[in-house]
Length: 204
Image (cartoon, rainbow, N blue to C red; front, side):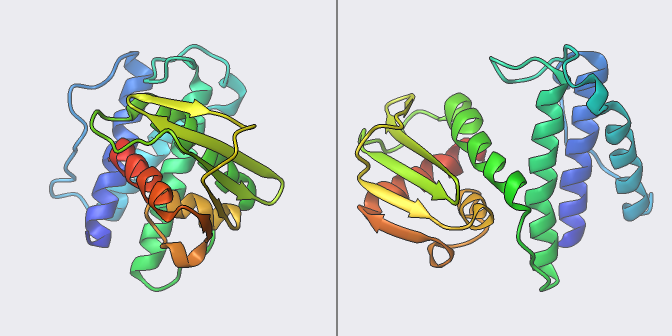
């Protein structure tokens, strides 16, 4: 994917979400084309339109979402923060200027991946063993176990493996933006790889 492709992808998401919020339903399609417009200008227009509807003062207002437990504008404020942050890393990596995610945002990103994406989007056929994996960053940790079609959140479980590192490193590892060399893996590596594969399948 080129930087231009990335702009089209993120710009399309911004337009889709703006439509979703303002019309109260999922759009029929989301891949947009800038046509003959200047790509950067096209991206800026879409981003400005999205920012205009993502009013933090209205975070509790009802909104159509794909989350079973959160139908508020706050869902989209959080989702777009993480979507844009991960793709910001993509853009910086493309020009050799990678920078870590802000720790608080990254820690919330780990929470979002494990609870929202795995909880809602785990596809059938994902390799599962029921063995727990703990993800640990300074001040926080999450322990999950994958079963067929179900994710257990089990903070008191004895994990088969532990993945630890900075919030940015663990979040970007979950999203496939960095390798295992940027995190510490202890225990059953196979269980860790199964979790990472499940996240990849859930996030597309």
